[in-house]
Image 1: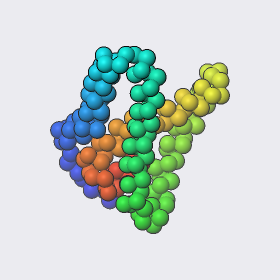
Image 2: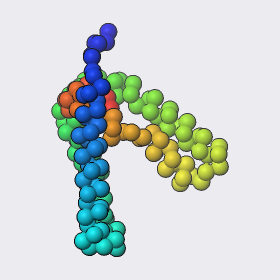
Image 3: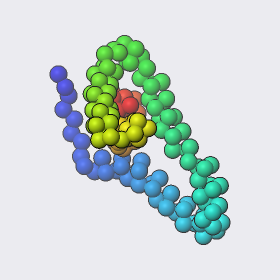
Length: 143
Protein backbone atom coordinates (compact mmCIF):
# COMPACT_ATOMS: atom_id res chain seq x y z
CA UNK A 1 0.00 0.00 0.00
CA UNK A 2 1.05 3.54 -0.62
CA UNK A 3 1.38 6.39 1.79
CA UNK A 4 -0.63 9.56 1.38
CA UNK A 5 1.60 12.62 1.44
CA UNK A 6 0.15 16.10 1.53
CA UNK A 7 2.43 18.40 -0.45
CA UNK A 8 1.47 21.99 -0.97
CA UNK A 9 1.98 24.03 -4.09
CA UNK A 10 4.22 26.30 -2.03
CA UNK A 11 6.77 23.51 -1.44
CA UNK A 12 6.90 22.66 -5.12
CA UNK A 13 7.11 26.32 -6.15
CA UNK A 14 9.94 26.86 -3.66
CA UNK A 15 11.85 23.86 -5.03
CA UNK A 16 11.44 25.06 -8.60
CA UNK A 17 12.48 28.58 -7.64
CA UNK A 18 15.58 27.40 -5.78
CA UNK A 19 16.75 24.76 -8.26
CA UNK A 20 15.78 26.51 -11.50
CA UNK A 21 15.09 30.17 -10.71
CA UNK A 22 18.38 30.94 -9.01
CA UNK A 23 20.53 29.37 -11.75
CA UNK A 24 18.43 31.13 -14.40
CA UNK A 25 18.84 34.50 -12.69
CA UNK A 26 22.58 33.87 -12.23
CA UNK A 27 22.86 33.01 -15.93
CA UNK A 28 21.03 36.14 -17.02
CA UNK A 29 23.14 38.35 -14.76
CA UNK A 30 26.35 36.65 -15.90
CA UNK A 31 25.43 37.00 -19.56
CA UNK A 32 24.60 40.69 -19.47
CA UNK A 33 27.48 41.58 -17.13
CA UNK A 34 30.16 39.69 -19.04
CA UNK A 35 28.98 40.81 -22.48
CA UNK A 36 29.05 44.41 -21.27
CA UNK A 37 32.54 44.00 -19.74
CA UNK A 38 34.30 41.69 -22.23
CA UNK A 39 32.12 41.59 -25.35
CA UNK A 40 29.99 38.98 -27.10
CA UNK A 41 32.94 37.21 -28.71
CA UNK A 42 34.71 36.58 -25.40
CA UNK A 43 31.46 35.52 -23.76
CA UNK A 44 30.59 33.02 -26.50
CA UNK A 45 34.07 31.75 -27.34
CA UNK A 46 35.87 31.77 -23.97
CA UNK A 47 33.49 31.90 -21.00
CA UNK A 48 30.66 29.64 -22.19
CA UNK A 49 32.90 26.74 -23.23
CA UNK A 50 34.39 26.89 -19.71
CA UNK A 51 31.04 27.17 -17.91
CA UNK A 52 29.05 24.84 -20.15
CA UNK A 53 30.06 21.56 -18.50
CA UNK A 54 29.21 22.78 -14.98
CA UNK A 55 25.50 21.98 -15.36
CA UNK A 56 26.26 18.39 -16.30
CA UNK A 57 28.80 18.08 -13.49
CA UNK A 58 26.24 19.37 -10.98
CA UNK A 59 23.59 16.95 -12.21
CA UNK A 60 26.00 14.02 -12.16
CA UNK A 61 27.15 14.99 -8.66
CA UNK A 62 23.54 15.00 -7.45
CA UNK A 63 22.93 11.58 -9.00
CA UNK A 64 26.12 10.14 -7.48
CA UNK A 65 25.20 11.48 -4.04
CA UNK A 66 21.69 10.05 -4.33
CA UNK A 67 22.94 6.64 -5.43
CA UNK A 68 25.61 6.56 -2.73
CA UNK A 69 23.00 7.32 -0.09
CA UNK A 70 20.46 4.83 -1.47
CA UNK A 71 22.67 2.25 -3.16
CA UNK A 72 21.70 -0.48 -0.71
CA UNK A 73 18.03 -0.02 -1.66
CA UNK A 74 18.86 -0.42 -5.35
CA UNK A 75 20.88 -3.55 -4.74
CA UNK A 76 18.25 -4.97 -2.39
CA UNK A 77 15.38 -4.43 -4.83
CA UNK A 78 16.65 -4.21 -8.42
CA UNK A 79 13.12 -4.79 -9.73
CA UNK A 80 12.20 -1.31 -8.50
CA UNK A 81 14.75 0.08 -10.94
CA UNK A 82 13.18 -1.94 -13.75
CA UNK A 83 9.73 -0.76 -12.74
CA UNK A 84 10.86 2.81 -13.37
CA UNK A 85 13.14 2.06 -16.34
CA UNK A 86 10.70 0.02 -18.44
CA UNK A 87 8.17 2.84 -19.06
CA UNK A 88 11.03 5.22 -19.84
CA UNK A 89 12.54 2.72 -22.29
CA UNK A 90 9.14 2.22 -23.96
CA UNK A 91 8.73 6.00 -24.27
CA UNK A 92 12.23 6.32 -25.76
CA UNK A 93 11.57 3.54 -28.29
CA UNK A 94 8.19 5.04 -29.20
CA UNK A 95 9.75 8.46 -29.79
CA UNK A 96 12.54 6.86 -31.83
CA UNK A 97 10.05 4.88 -33.95
CA UNK A 98 7.92 7.98 -34.59
CA UNK A 99 11.03 9.98 -35.53
CA UNK A 100 12.18 7.29 -37.98
CA UNK A 101 8.63 6.96 -39.36
CA UNK A 102 8.63 10.73 -39.94
CA UNK A 103 11.82 10.20 -41.99
CA UNK A 104 14.27 11.88 -39.60
CA UNK A 105 17.90 10.91 -40.10
CA UNK A 106 19.18 8.43 -37.51
CA UNK A 107 21.30 11.06 -35.73
CA UNK A 108 18.34 13.42 -35.41
CA UNK A 109 15.95 10.63 -34.41
CA UNK A 110 18.30 9.46 -31.65
CA UNK A 111 18.81 13.01 -30.39
CA UNK A 112 15.08 13.68 -30.46
CA UNK A 113 14.34 10.47 -28.57
CA UNK A 114 16.92 11.09 -25.85
CA UNK A 115 15.74 14.68 -25.46
CA UNK A 116 12.10 13.65 -25.21
CA UNK A 117 12.84 10.85 -22.75
CA UNK A 118 14.88 13.15 -20.51
CA UNK A 119 12.59 16.17 -20.80
CA UNK A 120 12.16 17.91 -17.45
CA UNK A 121 14.57 15.42 -15.85
CA UNK A 122 16.34 18.13 -13.86
CA UNK A 123 13.05 19.65 -12.74
CA UNK A 124 11.73 16.28 -11.57
CA UNK A 125 14.89 15.68 -9.53
CA UNK A 126 14.82 19.22 -8.12
CA UNK A 127 11.21 18.97 -6.99
CA UNK A 128 11.68 15.49 -5.50
CA UNK A 129 14.87 16.46 -3.64
CA UNK A 130 13.45 19.77 -2.46
CA UNK A 131 10.17 18.25 -1.30
CA UNK A 132 11.16 14.84 0.06
CA UNK A 133 14.93 15.17 0.65
CA UNK A 134 17.90 13.79 -1.22
CA UNK A 135 17.78 10.38 0.51
CA UNK A 136 14.08 9.80 -0.19
CA UNK A 137 12.58 7.00 -2.26
CA UNK A 138 10.79 9.62 -4.36
CA UNK A 139 14.05 11.35 -5.30
CA UNK A 140 15.67 8.01 -6.08
CA UNK A 141 12.73 7.15 -8.35
CA UNK A 142 13.32 10.34 -10.34
CA UNK A 143 16.91 9.32 -10.99
